[in-house]
Length: 339
Image 1: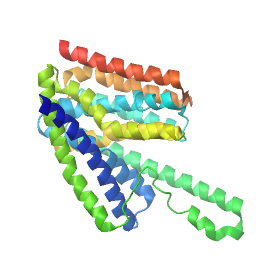
Image 2 (image 1 turned 120 degrees about the horizontal axis):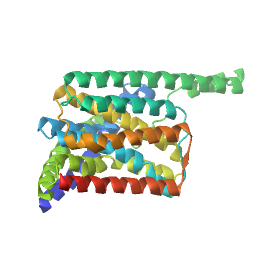
Image 3 (image 1 turned 60 degrees about the vertical axis):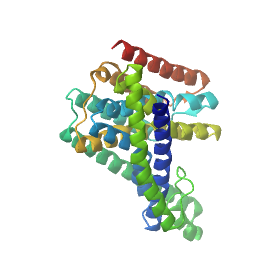
Image 4 (image 1 turned 120 degrees about the vertical axis):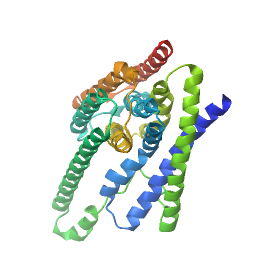
């Protein structure tokens, strides 16, 4: 039994480290190849940070553990809203009025509703996966256009305020912004390639130990694989987002938290479930249909309200959201034992 806990914890650690290394290496290679940082941020970084969840869901589905595959994504989306936004608010005020947050949050609600509809036609098959991937393409294209428009406006404002005398420096303003969310990117393309190799080896290895440990623990605890996926694995794969938002709150940069959460939730549903379903059909456990997808939808609506009303989360609201997550986890375990 002890080995199962070590396998689960060690697998999650390997997944997180391998995902981080893969992102750094991929960004290093992309920058050396001259790919714009905007494109890198919307594709490589976004996919790379979701790599642990993707590998977990894909491997679980291929091994017939659909509960882990679905529970991992649904549980992560719930944790992202209640915990990843709630805990940093206990440290410092977290504004929810980031530009574009409401628009993206509404898209997230629409995606969540589409995903819920697909869940009732279990298994989620190839056609459903293609639908989700098409929606992902729409999201990426729209995000690219909005980002490019914003940067052109910023360049025009800078040029107008600086005047013709500083025409040369304004060229720098039109260049790529730094990828602040990715640190310690290797300068050498060979080191970057080694990073990619380590990441590609580490991800499936971490997924193997995580799923092996999780399924054994679920059997020992007398709960379903979905319960483990919704709680332990979901929380584990959400740790990078949680660490990022906590550090942002400590540095008084909490305004970016809501955008990161919305983007992560959209990618979880569209990219992870979409890619997994294209490879292998995903069975949706009945217990997930009764409670968890509705909690996920409620969290998506809550996030949209926070963004639309431009609410600033303080300690009281942060405590309420964190307590709600703890209550949800307790409810999942109680229902899992009584099922």
